[in-house]
Image (cartoon, rainbow, N blue to C red; front, side, top):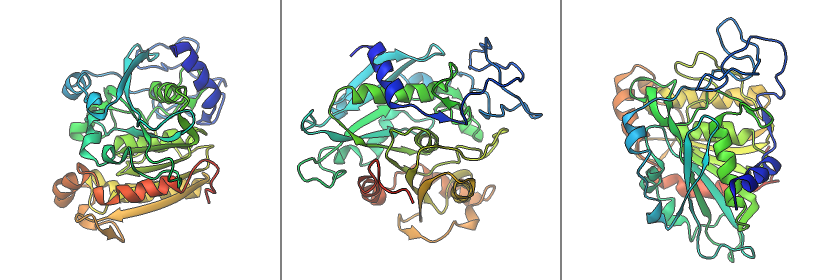
Length: 357
């Protein structure tokens, strides 16, 4: 399957217009890509310098230690996976993904596809910290005993600047700040286009259950998952861990109201004590989604440091509190293995077409 064929499949399968649609209205010409190309692009800019429709300008490329080292090293082979390297994004950045397929997946036995987005500063290999790979051949994501397991797709982010505090100001990650998810735009967010491409490449193998294309992620990968899935009708549901608000949090100068045209069930597991105040930020994200009218089935699960269910955020871990910087960081960088099964169960129970309310 060549790149042109995969691109064609992506165009057919992933038609969505995130952020509102065709933005050819008069406005100020502004650079639509991180390389600064401003040709033939017009969007309105508000008095803060923010795109009216797309939020922030694309995050510029950087050269960070984690991007230079971790971006080139991966353990795809340890998953029995295939390294996909046939795609370069419109900014000229070569992109790659790891596709791991259980032996029982076939055209006759189509399996769910789980797309997992890594956290910022950490590569696709971060999935080995989780217990997700251990469940690839046996997990029930269909309710059908004859179809155990799932296909795992691990797309890689790129090295850019972020609107996150301190050490996470740049490095590997996902640009959820430039919120152009309009598939008809020549300046589509390059991370969105990359996800489109590799999902289409996986689907083109003809062993993916089209009603069970799921997404998951960790931290910045969770933020990108929420933004992407809400605006990609092919995605059935999402289950994420410790997600910052993809529509505006921390130092983001161009926050936006949540938007999305994909009625999407989302399960968010997050810590009562987390770094940078992600817990109250997660609560606000879900409040904002509800009040914005985005059609989504939102399930929020707070957990404590012992990985047990909690009922509320720990106020001692709010931004600026010492406990949030120490214990919050410790909690944030460990995957909640006690909750992986409930995340997978949620995905199984929400295939495409299930009720989102």
